[in-house]
Image (cartoon, rainbow, N blue to C red):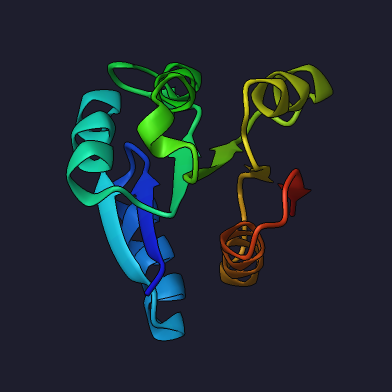
Length: 127
């Protein structure tokens, strides 16, 4: 079973993503902050992390950097999500090792297709 960690400070968005992904048979976990995300990555070891760029205690790019520095998480695909869709930000996230970029707002179909694509090994996926 594919395990997904959804990291976003919005409870509503986390819940909407859970609702979109759970019918696919995915094991979905959530976190609301960078610190909680790191704790969940260590305890759950997800296959995919859907990671908001803007978090209350830091930014998603620092969490991405932390994941990529830890060789135990080499297999973890990280999809960055943000309302900022400038090409520089997307390029930076991809250069840091993100597997994809999901611009906000996104639809349930967008999140499903991107998460499934990176879970199956596709890289640099953007909705």
